[in-house]
Every structure is written in structure tokens, then in C-alpha cells.
Length: 204
Ligand code: HEM
Image (cartoon, rainbow, N blue to C red; front, side):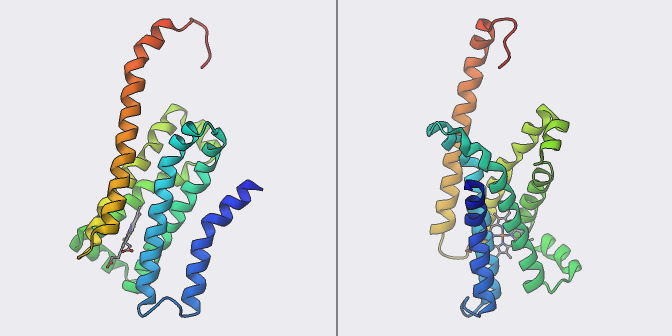
């Protein structure tokens, strides 16, 4: 039931956007609105993905961690929708122009690298891949932090005058990464101590 609710919540902005587009309620430039909104929702969900482990720890609610895969896959769905909207509405499916845009506009290139970074994470999100990759799976999925940084840079680069929203998103990303770094330093600092005090045959 809660899983269904999660999928419903993540799908809602996309359904709302599609309905708005079909009914012509997205303002004077509906195509641009689709590109902007899918971009924003992709970013919102990416931030949620990196926040969930911390939230689960703070709230002492491990169930939150089980939402991470679904939220991550929804983030990837929105980014892919964003890319497809760009290719459809701005390039008219002229794939050669995509190559030109990647070379000409660095914000497109940065966004594209973020999408490429997320792709292997989406593909390897199944239980079978988790088993197959072993400890390498966790390392690979740290890539979400690279994607979220690239997303912040991409957003900042799209802005022409008002940096308020893009700047706020960038600040949130910096805050999350600082917390992550602080935690990493803490666990690294305590590692030799726990290794020294660990009993020989524990399974943790
Ligand atoms: C993780 C990947 C990505 C994220 C999170 C993301 C997010 C965003 C955000 C937040 C915006 C600004 C929306 C607004 O102004 O309200 C945006 C704009 C845009 N993005 Fe992305 N994006 C990503 C990847 C891509 C890719 C792969 C492409 C195309 C190859 C792309 C093309 C664009 C374009 C054309 C705009 C509109 C720029 C304008 O205002 O003229 N993005 N994106």
C-alpha cells in the first residue's frame, strides 16, 4: 500500500504535466514548460534520493531506505522525459543536431553527462545486479552524488538573469555533500578503533 502511494506521488507531477500539455494549459510556451518542469522534477527526486539515507538514519526509520530504488528510478524517468522533450520539441528528432548542441552548448553537455551517469545506476538497480556486482554495486551507486552535482551545475548554467532558484538548489546540494563528507570522515576516523576492538568472528 505504502509502495503504491510512493509510485502515485512520484507519477503525479508527470500526469499533471501531460494533462496540462494536452489541454493547452501550460502557458504561452508549453513545450518549454514541459522541458522546465521535467527538469525540475528530475532534480527534486535526485535530491530526495541522496537525502533518504540521512533521513532514514535521523528518523530511525529504516523503511525509508526501501523507497530509494523507486525514487531513483522515477528520477531517471523524469530526466529521460526531459531529454526526450528536448529532442522532440527543440530538435524535432534531428539526432545530428543533438551532437551539434552538445558541442555548442556546455549546459547541454553537462546535463547529458548527468543523464549518462544515471543510466548504469538505473540498469543495475535490480536485486540480481546487486548480487552480481557485490561490493562494487555500492561504489557504482555513489555515482548519484556526481549526477546531483552535475545537475546543479547544469541548472545554474541554464539561468540567464534570476539565480534565486538555481542558486537555492545548488546550496541544497552543497549542504547535502558537506554532510555526506562529514559522515564519511567520521566513519573513516572511527574505522581503526572498531577494527581493533572487533571480535574475530562477527558478521556485521
Ligand atoms: C540529471 C540530469 C538533468 C537534470 C536534473 C536537469 C534539470 C534541469 C533543470 C532544473 C532545468 C531548469 C528548469 C527551469 O528553468 O525551471 C533544466 C533546463 C534545461 N535542460 Fe536539463 N537537466 C538534466 C539533463 C538534461 C539533458 C540530458 C538535456 C539535453 C540533452 C537537458 C536540456 C535542458 C534544456 C534545453 C533546458 C532549458 C534551458 C532553457 O531554459 O532554455 N537537460 N534542466
